[in-house]
Image (cartoon, rainbow, N blue to C red):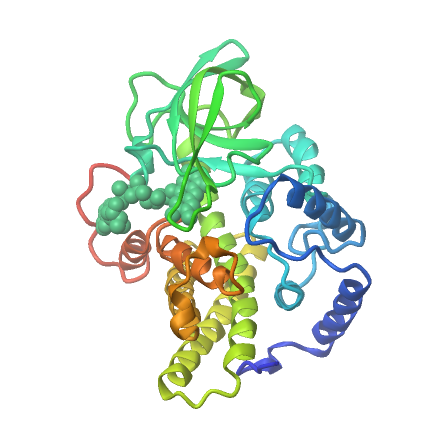
Length: 394
Ligand SMILES: Cc1cc2nc3c(=O)[nH]c(=O)nc-3n(C[C@H](O)[C@H](O)[C@H](O)COP(=O)(O)OP(=O)(O)OC[C@H]3O[C@@H](n4cnc5c(N)ncnc54)[C@H](O)[C@@H]3O)c2cc1C
């Protein structure tokens, strides 16, 4: 099945040529099929394919050439996302590395940090997790309590993080910690990179309601990180974290745009002959959401390329992502009829639908909740008075 988007004249001839060229490359280098659960064996296969993509110059279209990217126009980037979606590639696991850590290092890292990590990220050799949230610091990230005591050339880390996606698989983590004793809120924080196999780090998985265990709690007991791995300088962690959070929202909006296109294709295959008016109406609603998300993806990519990622565009994209993911997942279930009652663990042909459905509420929480995005838009774009709060929130 295929579908058209309104405004398909968004792409010029050059971008359509790129689509043909990239499609041919995908036929010649078929990506590994996306698994229901990402594990180490899939990761090994996916890393190898990512290395092929990078070697062909398609690794990070949005990165500048000096950092190993392709510096291609925004249209090429969207075209690539759409073609990856049509080939059912799930790039979500690398979203932290490509859309968050990479751009952060370009914006705030030093040469040694960039030279060490960017080429490895490009080849899929570094999988990253974000160690930001704590049991008492989620939306109000600035109340993070994890300590990073400066001891000569090291930070000695003690504390706990939670909801760390892929912490059990990742090679590296980006940690927000308090490096200046006696400070609170956004003062005295630092953002540091550390290897997750460092002694003193314990990763414990958290079982989710879809049966997966993609999240983790991470405990630190006298774990050492190098001060050379602090990004943006010791004590500047809040400023650096704000840059990261903008990139996080944009990255999630783009990555989930890709998966929504893939989901829409699957839904159309299932429902293409349906005369059920409710399903048709919901399908049109989902399609409209994805079409709007596409335009927001354009704007977000343009803002990133201009070097001024817009927090407002990022918040709009993140809000749409959350709503669209939930609507789409509900429609997948509605389209199944009685099969929707099967247990997702039953390995039925429909278990993926239930899996996606049970995971979908998380899209309005991860990367900053929908409430926090609305707060940001109310204050940043509508210029409403700031709400009273004890400290800065994500
Ligand atoms: C799928 C998923 C993946 C995640 N991955 C990671 C990860 O890799 N690394 C990481 O560090 N974290 C991760 N998180 C954690 C995520 O960032 C936090 O869950 C999120 O920021 C909310 O924080 P919290 O859970 O502590 O909720 P809280 O901040 O306690 O919020 C609880 C409720 O109160 C509302 N609320 C709070 N403050 C306000 C306010 N000022 N105004 C209005 N409403 C408010 C919130 O919107 C929410 O509904 C992930 C979460 C999910 C769901």
